[in-house]
Length: 211
Image 1: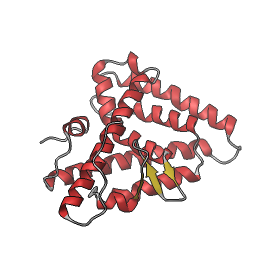
Image 2: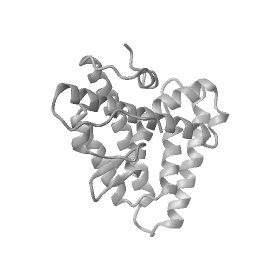
Image 3: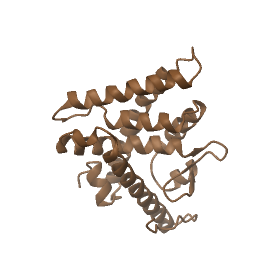
Image 4: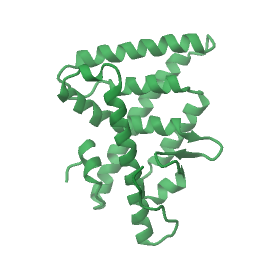
């Protein structure tokens, strides 16, 4: 893995800047993994290139939150990202990433309480990737692919979960929370722009942050 800036624990302005740089570097690594994973999801390569780009840009922050939940450790209340280092919500706050930390960690804890397994995480990720987004050239094709993954998740949850718990519906309800977290990420990026904290070009491009 590419070497990243160390995560300092001091309170100086330089330490704050280095923490922000560290988090953005880890975010780049994570989003790069998400892009590569998305390209390999069955059905993705059948889409128009324009729609592939639209979906990658729109889904990356939501899939990143889903990935964070999968890497959440309830005992330490921390998330382990691409560098295998645990990050607490205080780490997030100290890196100047806004007030989204509490919402993200609430989501992670909820997913942990639902005991979402790896297959369900993979299917939820596919459903997020093929979600309806603005400016799609062929939205009906994207919708058909998403319906396949939704039906697969329904069948899987019915076969692997106790009946009468509305587990499938509860899983689908997490998608609304993911969309909210994605919107919060967009607001945070705008806030950083106002504070003159520039995101690296890769993140600015994939999240459509205009200079």
